[in-house]
Length: 320
Ligand SMILES: Nc1ncnc2c1ncn2[C@@H]1O[C@H](COP(=O)(O)OP(=O)(O)OP(=O)(O)O)[C@@H](O)[C@H]1O
Ligand SMILES: [Mg+2]
Image (cartoon, rainbow, N blue to C red; front, side, top):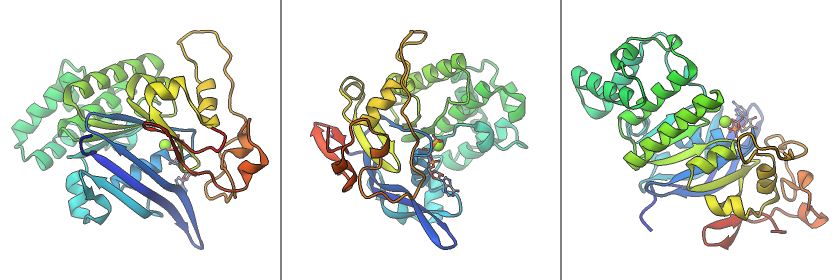
């Protein structure tokens, strides 16, 4: 196997308040290989965004990585200086967020925001940077890129802003793209268009992707491999086909049963009862036991280990 682009090893991320530390991401391990699209899935609050913000070192103030390693092309990002990290962010690793209004500056034109990064990271002059920006804007479906460059974020629709973010993220040709729910805020038709576009660009550029979503339908369309997270831990991971055809963890099965398989198909969707335990809840056994249809008293005794089942298939469940 080729050397992975990203290796996350026993990553722990916590939030500190006055007298308490709450562990949000609790010792997760995964790798992303060259050209690989890895999906990170799980219900709201399970730690997906905190994982991606840990990698980017963009955690909110009270948050910190409290353990583990994040190796990008072999270098541990946690050991870099702020300046070194700033050179990697945007240039080698870029990120797209769910709501582009939070990452676009409302008072600057799209053009200024796009070219600022291109000038800084690619050492391009202003004219060259405008050319590169136009080329990417055209590729994400804007036939008149110079008009878009002159626009302010609020003058564009949600779908247009998300395509601008994609153009921005791609313009420095990063090795790794982190997309955190990039299409969740869009309506279904626009979502499909943006996903098609992303897939095309990824095939063309060969970049690696960490694709975060709670929508398994999107996973099936986009990813090679899937990591399922629950309450800050990985509970199952497998290649996309295996995960959809032979899921092992009751939580993964639950997620699949609560996802419509075909657009418009009439089928029975079964939601998972209950909800994710609040971050920091201390449980002696399996964190999913209270919602699990097959849990026995044994499951509540000690925390289950993540076990290797087949090649590339791991599961954290003693019953699987
Ligand atoms: N600033 C903060 N201070 C303390 N806890 C936080 C903070 N931000 C998030 N959390 C907690 O971290 C946990 C994980 O949040 P995270 O945003 O990673 O979830 P997520 O999986 O991305 O969910 P979603 O699908 O809703 O985006 C949640 O329990 C949340 O309450
Ligand atoms: Mg999130």
